[in-house]
Image (cartoon, rainbow, N blue to C red):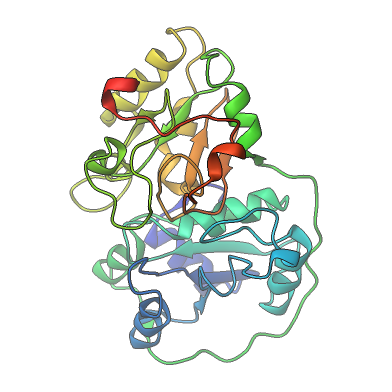
Length: 301
């Protein structure tokens, strides 16, 4: 079973074995949402199905969503129904990838864990690594899979809401808040997507690109000392997040970075897969929802 990362050679072996396997392409573009499906149709890993961030992995209907913002999470029941329609059952090994530095496929990885499915892994290096190692690709749509039954089980990952994060902002021993966006956005120097710039007070900045090597694959634990340093500083060197948690924090990134809320955040506890996601996109007037906590700039945190 593959539960975090899978290498292209390992995926090739699984495909050749005839295993109960489903591969999803989660390529996307925040600035041009329609490009996700367009690039999938142009070229994708042979046999992979497309999972669209906007249409499938988010719920635009408030009655079907568990939070708000640009990309609200769908209710687990709705997501399970979609998984069943895509030929995923309780024994399926799922592999997810994108062509965006593994930025967006982490959302599907985390959602499956959230629904209790352990056998899901991110293709290390994404489509680029697959092609570089001679993996087969195809274009156009794939045949519709035969439906199976996916059962919801106890979550293997925990979602925390705005109130949970706000309640512990002054207690560094209770949570570590990681902002995975680029440093200029974290500092509030630029904000291309949302009306409020900055970051949640007390958040640490670990840009997700820093977790990758020059070839686009995840760094090994020993090659990413900044990950351990950040974790140790957050907890006074006593309760740092596990190396696993931080090494694969990109895989847990929900795929749409943003300011203090409505974004993909990691609230990392010891050996926990915890994500703070409020759907992405800060709204004017959100202060009441987060009990008056204001977006911080460098001088404030």
